[in-house]
Length: 142
Image 1 (cartoon, one colour):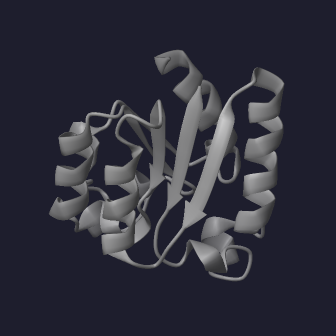
Image 2: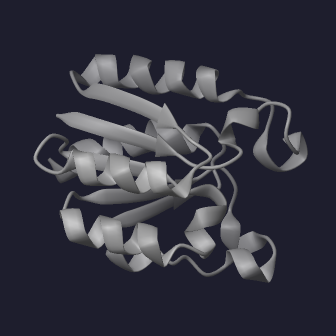
């Protein structure tokens, strides 16, 4: 199983950005935990981060026929990007939406996900563990 983990804007600042909301774990530490869990299951991981919406879209496009599952933390783009929604729908690769925080317990504008209708499911509110849980969720889709 090949799993593509995509991380959107500002996630490169994890560990220092609003630690009361996002925790003190860095994205590199999250990647290490994901790779450890994947290693236990035999899954191959490609783990990426960008602050650019177009780059996320290009990576989603490139997953078609190559990756088995996409795990996407679109960050703020979750709530605004029709383009990401359309890219997910276009490629047909099963996609799991993940978030560190419980977006439904936060500001009202975070309650709406533009990508949820084209994703297989959501994992939210478990901090860095959301990513590890996503490995198992991705395996269940294979």
